[in-house]
Length: 354
Image (tube, rainbow, N blue to C red; front, side, top):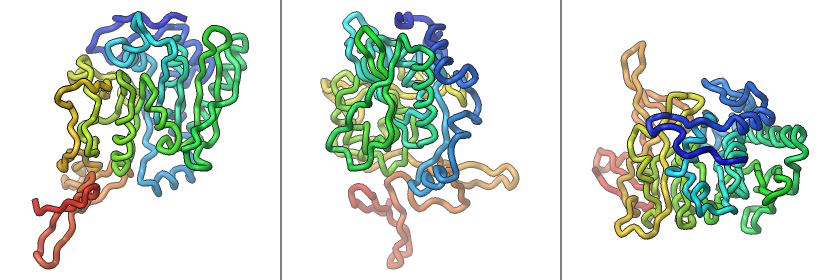
């Protein structure tokens, strides 16, 4: 099927029109009512079990969930944003797309269906019940379109991955043509999946992760291939907890704050960040080695009833009245000797009074 036409929309729109054929295929896979869900009560939210919620709390993470809407995906994949290596006249017919934290799988499946130059699209999701939504959608689409798609064996995981980390997987192949593949895997993408960043042309990273994992994320993204583009929930600068500078720079069209994308929780548009791996930068846009990261998992909020301020942790979804003693990679530690707090930088061991 043809790729979505370039220019179908303006920069200040949160979404570009998605081809009807793609929407029809998504509806065959997921069901008509689950494509374009809005609000907070989504299928991929309701599916989570008490055990999955408990496991998330133990990890220090949250199951808070939302999705890019189809027109938001189409805008994200436009040529000036993520689609440069996929939609241009010299586009790579063997392009690889990686989605870290793929949830229900709608973004990965849409990308694969909509852009024929995507040879392999891999979505990795940690929560089993959310992975199962994507696996069910694959099985459904294959059963509804047996002349176009078939199930095949998933790609073997690299031998470097930890034993037992791979989890369940499902893979669908296009019949005829380049026999393109769409694959979903239930796993922690830090154990299985993130290693694919070194060969991916596009990486969707529209997910929130605990800040303790920022150093591992940054060190892996250092291996990204030249020209790779990443779609990120986070601005990379504040979370680049790494001694080496980042090879990524923000793409020009995404720099204005008005460049937003339609999502389930904000159909009118939500801010995401798009970067390109460019090692020719004379002065890196995102330097390494800093000790003054601006990221904090805590947000001060005002209680309406008492008009007092409290602190909300948007990683764990917990709240407290007391001022946090740790924010980002900094810890406040009380010194009985000096009767004052000093500050400890967890990653480097650096301490300071200010």
